[in-house]
Image 1 (cartoon, rainbow, N blue to C red):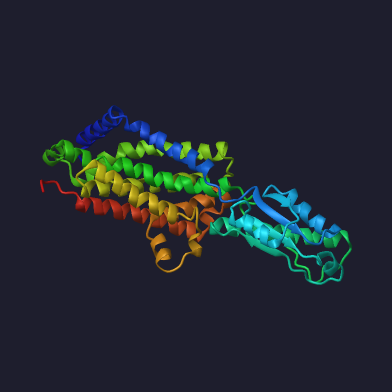
Image 2 (cartoon, rainbow, N blue to C red):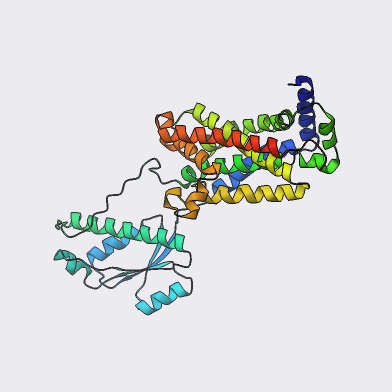
Length: 373
């Protein structure tokens, strides 16, 4: 290898990144994405407006209503209106849900009979509606169980909710969102920077320096990517500190596994940007194409917003075609689970990431032409 020439290219890239202020984007963009989305994305629903029609007005119905009134998930309001008027309030977007307690609620419970409670939820936004419906069901079941215990009634025929959660017992959005954001950030930011490295040489005409140099295509790509790789490697630690100390996300796994997988992932991201930079001839085209190729799969197939296991058909296949799924799985393991290399799946995913690095770099070397087109 022509070490002196490679060193000169590396120094040139560092000077170019500093001169064009792109080095600011290297650290500002990832941190801003994590901060904005980390605080902005919320999957839970709090203070849902629920209108309760208490047609029983008994001791038992009051005990059930108090469950809603003392829950952070609901802004409960008890009104003595008709069912038609209550449903109209949903239509007018004044209420998110209506709960109707039947007039025979206490009587049927005293006789250990099942009692039907009406639930109407505004489903204009299906995900939000499903969440609210789940909260209502959980609160009702909890309230009915407490009524039975306090009154010494037989629990026979009553449904007892015994819900347990693993790995994120507090059900904090940050614990689920922030690790996924790290996977998104380390896919998008390095790729955008790498997408500009070669295409800008084409626009300025300085690519002819490479054509006339003794460097091979592989050495040229290594010299171009090394500064960006080194700079973005620092983001691995910055994003870790933001996740653990700013968002209080637990870290239960191996830091070495987190670091190693992140370095591989950055190489993959840089290789994606490098490929785009090779096949395009304008910087604006390279940036737009990189955003499309990285951000959309990063959101859809990372598992941050939708579990991969719930996908089927083409979407399930597509998810396994992008590296973000494999890296995000490792992130969730290191932050929330801590199984590490004891899991065969983690080892397999690491090997798949290595395969992505080798494959993408090889393709880039083949596509790069050391001659005028």
